[in-house]
Image (cartoon, rainbow, N blue to C red):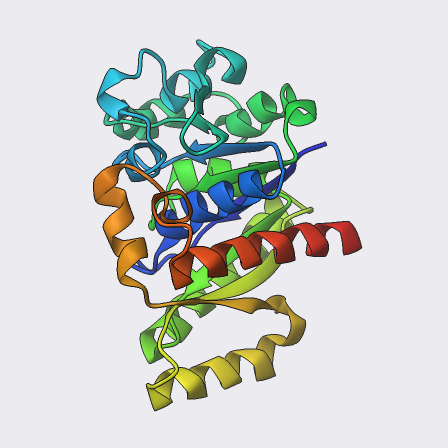
Amino acid sequence: MAKIFCVANQKGGVGKTTTTVNLAAGLAKVGQRVLMVDLDPQGNATMGSGVDKRQLALSVYDVLLESASIREVAVFSEKCGYHVLGANRELSGAEVELVALDHREKRLKAALAEVAGDYDFVLIDCPPSLSMLTLNGLCSANGVIVPMQCEYFALEGLTDLVNTIKQVHANLNPDLQIIGLLRVMFDPRITLQQQVSEQLKGHFGNKVFNSVIPRNVRLAEAPSYGLPGVVFDPAAKGSQAFVEFANEMVDRIRAM
């Protein structure tokens, strides 16, 4: 049965999409069957997985409106080694259309249940806002992976996210929990980042992943080539860190 994880943070620009596509590519590289779900209307995770969002005949929008199944919609990215449930601008309309529908926050969960045996991991890239789309992701998931920079404002955003997860856990998805915090864009030369990193470990303990993703130019360049950094430049420090993180995720799931 697939383990389903949201990659979420209510603060924008923290590397959610970079984390989602590189973790997906890293997991595929270590032999896992992966489905990457793009829940952001901007479709960046779709484009960053080697899939052109403008060419999609069907998207996650059709899955949420129950006009198509995941098996019909998902496409396999040959370059990246995982399946992509893509998104494009159509998805922004789903926000309004879902409001009037039954079970609106659990439509993705129902769709994923049909393919749970096809994958080892399902990774969901959520938009930064707490929207009906994010809620669908959180209601589907076994847990949340939180990428965060070790900066002061990131701590404030984390407090908001923890409160959201508690509310969803209490009202909609009793399985939901924080799986772990991933420190991204980390520069050990900056004293503040080291201090915030220590604060995180002191407060969250083993919920902080051992893997740390360094600030890395090659990871930043990769999306312009429509690829995760792990595929674009496997030798880069950032790419190697994501493969380490993928191995850590597999070990953590086995231990759960």
